[in-house]
Image (tube, rainbow, N blue to C red; front, side):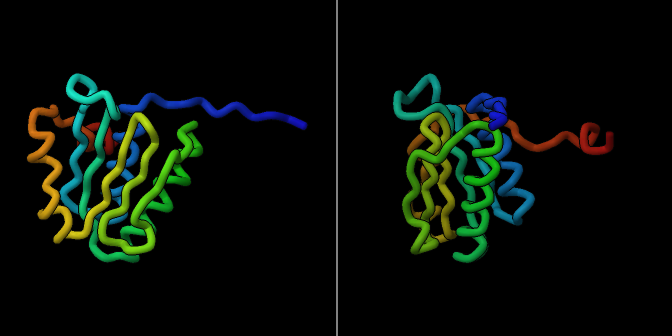
Length: 129
């Protein structure tokens, strides 16, 4: 039996990868918060709004699948059955997928307002290579 080794990416790289997956699947208002200096719970939050409950579940499933390919197993998932607020916990990266109402109601960006934001967009120059 041949054992393949998966090269594990850093939590920051995982957060950026997740944001890019969300963007490619038409999610909205994507934010990565760097919590390393202000929280002992996790290193990064990735927060975004889905366009429908089906889209949110689909994006969540794709994120879990792609994260596993780069060495990050899902520790816990919550809210998948309701499609209002799906939480994916990868320990060092926690993903919050909200519908619009719950995103506004919980306003995590306000609660974690001291956290720096991580730039995740691919620069135009890079995308043209």
